[in-house]
Image (cartoon, rainbow, N blue to C red; front, side, top):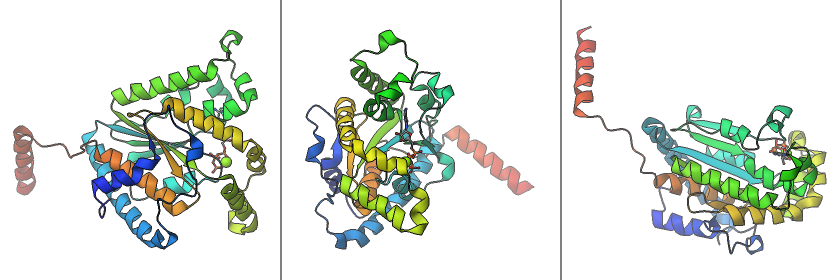
Length: 299
Ligand code: ATP
Ligand code: MG
């Protein structure tokens, strides 16, 4: 971001970026962490975010022109952690033609008639574009793990339903992300880490504030009883799928201003590493451009 150096940005992101999962423990991460910045920094954070958003708009336009790399941003979180508003804020400056957001809900009958990656593969961004997955194939080792009845509904042959299924899925997902990386996709995964107390507070706001009532879902409140199971499932998923080519970011999500800063910073840092530039025009193309100019001027 413009006012902080690349080195500072790296240092800022380091505590949240997981590239190897073996030693990862979720309880070492505080959802209320603000990187030592007090709430008086909120104004600066807004300014920095705006700079990051501008930078991203420019990078996305080069990504599109170059048409080589693709970018996949995966967002996972508990309800009310702020996925939607983070996506909205961080992508606010980007040309809508270059970005596609796909939200993955409980699978349809048609989706259940296929392998679990099918619907996600169909939604992958083309080269030159940014694809955002609002939930993703990770649900297959999160909600499906917490609620085994979903697994039972997946029409898998019985002989394949062994106790190794989660390990297998981790390997499949890790393999899929490796495949994407070696095909020119930048894969970044964000876990917006909200605390149980903050989630409760946000649900109560949805009940108390009329303009937030529409967001309230009684099912989400029921799902809270599985909070700890979800945290275990997230920890295990991150442990098995964090990699240098597909890092996880465990983003503190109790303070929205900080969540947005970390997410924007992570995307800026990673896209900066792609060496994006507008395609250079060679001598032959230049001659053609000159010809076109002459033709236009003579008309
Ligand atoms: P919001 O509530 O902000 O609209 P959301 O992502 O929570 O966003 P919902 O429609 O409320 O959207 O929830 C989608 C639900 O679908 C989640 O509870 C999620 O766990 C569930 N889901 C997603 N993928 C699967 C899957 N493969 N199997 C079963 N459930 C899934
Ligand atoms: Mg929901």
